Image 1 (cartoon, rainbow, N blue to C red):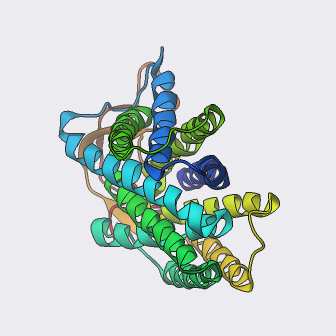
Image 2: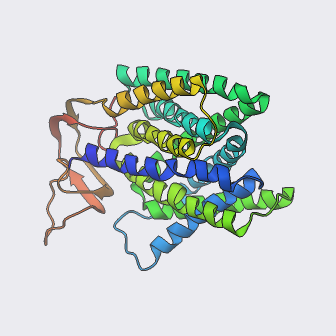
Length: 345
């Protein structure tokens, strides 16, 4: 399987793991504060990351001291602001509308990846983004059926997707680091921050059942999911990973409808159709042309069957590993994403 397909597969797994959590969070978070909910989610992610480190030797590069400002930024945006807004919004917009609105994360991520990293965006991606933005507007109309409170909930979920889009963009350079170590640091910082503020505000404590459900959601939807998301970013870049991750909301919406979150209005079906068109256009988008790689020496996770790493090991080494290596100048043509070797635009 080539690098792009592997990256897309990782993004799909991340999307499914995250998507199933939205309706569960809406249920388990009822009656407790949004900060408490966020703290439990990322406590679960931190726990999963800590367990994964036990007795494990990783071939990935370790997090460095210079990464600290970026880690603090993604913890605030992605592990504090994002989940808090999501928890508050889901209680007011409903799990179905809230889950579908998570599609906006792909739109915001694509736009930021284009601005920050100059990742290529073709006509299909632009059309897909327009479909998703229009779908978000349709969901806002549907949320209005629940009064102004429903609209505020939809706005809060949209705000969460913007926070996570910044998180995704700032995380891109960390995709070459050990994913579980990045998750452990981010989740620990986010859980500590939100738990502290929740205690200061005096938010109610959850029941044992709700706490266990939120910790489990955090371990899978915010821990394991983020690991696969980082592995996908490593292979196909921030924009394409974000676009494939747009599958997540459909998983959550399907579960919410199955448990009768609420009857969907006509605008929900319009939005679902527009989002489906957007996801299809994203996933089928391709980027291939003849390009040249200049000679370079660097250190990052890589494989020897990706067409870019032809250096030898004695004895031979299979699978992904990391060490300092040299690339000779090469010119070729193949389908590729915006990974470490394809930052051109």
